[in-house]
Image (cartoon, rainbow, N blue to C red; front, side, top):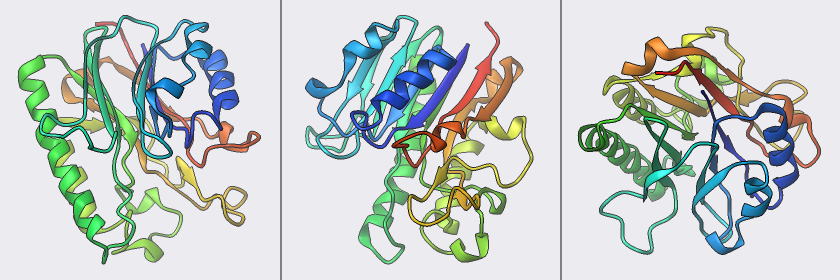
Length: 258
């Protein structure tokens, strides 16, 4: 079973790239972030024709998450239980093929001096609590993928000395991610690749792609109980070279059947 995650940075702008990638790779499940459309405007038909059911938590012009699956989708929830109707659409969860699978888009944080940075830290703490609650109540192994907007380690940035203490590589952000992993999850990519300079995001500005000046901020965190089933994980950088690319690329993990 192949599960992938991709921040498409507007599904309408990136639909051609998305369908091209789906046709080539055929993941069982694809998690999307930054879809940037309302549910009514989501291009379902192009995905349904390819055999994918879709569940969506959309928002006009910003945020938005979705799950695409070739398997039946059940028990969908959107956001945190305490969220009100006006909450940003950053989290969607569903039960698929014996797993609880989630697509998450963590707030950017903007700047460590800005109030939204504290909101980012609080959101990460809420996410950890939500994962623990889901594990206890749903009783399925969890896979959570998405754009976490945090580089975990120095090898996950092209110039860690420039980012140290700044948004995306602040110690408090990394502490929140480590607390999440310590709650019983693993970074699937790092189970198979120790190499530095493997990134999932490159700035649109300047020669970022040509000089490989990127960040690894997109992850698939897998329940520790699934470790024996993980056979391979990777980052597909090719779509960043396509016409009108997203600034992120897909990340993926393969699991043996239970």
